[in-house]
Length: 298
View (cartoon, helix red, strand yellow):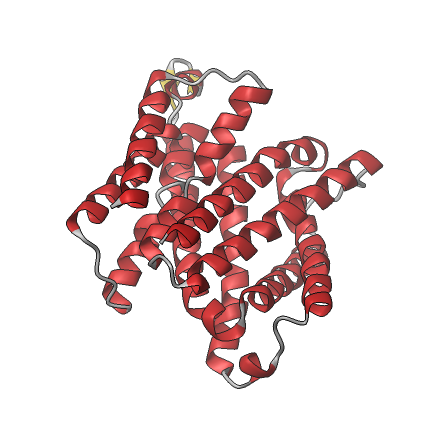
């Protein structure tokens, strides 16, 4: 139980940190191009790790074509989810996008219970629901809603755009993490990440070649941040896959703890950018800590 839970928290730390650091490059070359460029970095790093460690090999993947195909689909879901999230932040209202997107464990937990027959004790069920509620509250910034008004009236278009993109992120991330819970035990924790990153890289190249993304030449500093973000993002996938293959905690608990990545981003923004946490966010953080403690000890 403890190993899987700790790896779930490590996943949240890695992804929350990568989301936080993405501001550095997004302000210079754009969020979409950032999301695309970090994928080959993760692919290169993970390929080297697999080759050096020789821990995973292609035999299990080639012996299970449906799982291999699902692995590539997972990569497509991963990149699509990031693009939904970044587009929502750019075009919609962040305080609408963030709470909806952060509730993605709802999808993973539901699929796990319905399709895998996962059984949760009453206290764990309540704890998971409370943790997800806390994630939603931690992502709400009422001041952003107020400042998003146009002529003192918040445009319904921005609300709809934000809600749509948040929902897109929620669905993609929820299905992605459920899929990895099936893929990693068969293909291997490391190789599954390589295939995810390969899929994301291929799609990213397609996006660039389509001409729909405004290209900006990154300077050395930006390239450095992209390398760090790519490595951190990939490490999150590794931690998550090891968590689901550890057998020490079930998928709903792991994904709920991994879903704390948004809270990690909020806390880092508070520490480094001095962004003030609003009361509703503090309530969310408290709920998360209490729910997390319940998941770890009961």
